[in-house]
Image (cartoon, rainbow, N blue to C red; front, side):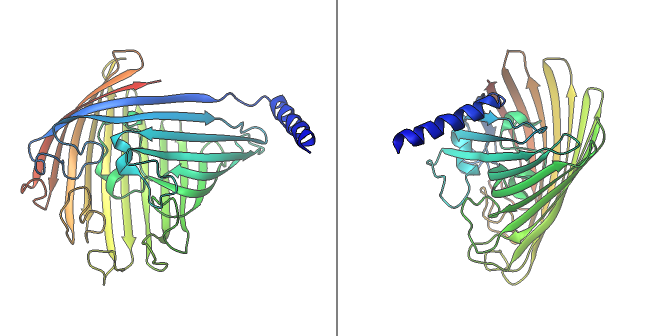
Length: 364
């Protein structure tokens, strides 16, 4: 039986090898940083921040390892994508459920398999299963992929980071693409209730210099509650003019009344708007500006989160300027200054704070 099984395995392996799939790709990054704010909480935590939350210290942010096996959209094919993240960034983007618990400073934010079926237009239809990054917003978990070094308020407070589930994706033509997902919930490895959540996106690209993306989401997100739905919409517009790029993002969300909200007897809502501008000063230096504003009407997204005090509503925003310096091969140096303001005295009994930071990353 073992000989028969081995012979069968060799035949399958030979058949797969004959298809000459694209090679496995290895990439990743390593990053360290320093941040200082005059209005930190107890000289330890910078309120409202994510990766840059640790006051006045040098931080080993992340060591990321990415393995990618591309699929071929022109034929029936398969691939996979996985990312392992080590360091202090992993602590704050870990999902609930515990199925992928690698410790407090390690996580697998991406791990999914893609099956492709060819289509007449050559783009194929992709079926993905596993843990995938969110469809919401511009910014991503991997800071080297963002225009600014620090994560903005929309990424932190009105979006999920990842989701586990299935996704169907395709490009209908050269101008329109669509994605539909059924997921366990926002940032949940194992579902925390008995119902699934939905997320869908439509992308429109009128030309090579313009794109518009619209995302909708719906589903129950609180533990043990199958009836209180969270739903909303996200819109992202991109435009490039010469060496300058512009993004505008708007978000609206609502969650039906439930015991997990600051005011359990009423629905909670929130909305946000943000803009980014990047300009290439030279081939080695770029400037990135970001401004954002969040109205957490009922405190559902910020009450007791990331150092913010318990609250039933606040308005807050930030302005950020970052230099992206690529004077060294495969490395990026990012000095940054940021201003935050809130209607609450959240920053060491003050309503605003100024912080300075320096991030250094190597990409391989």
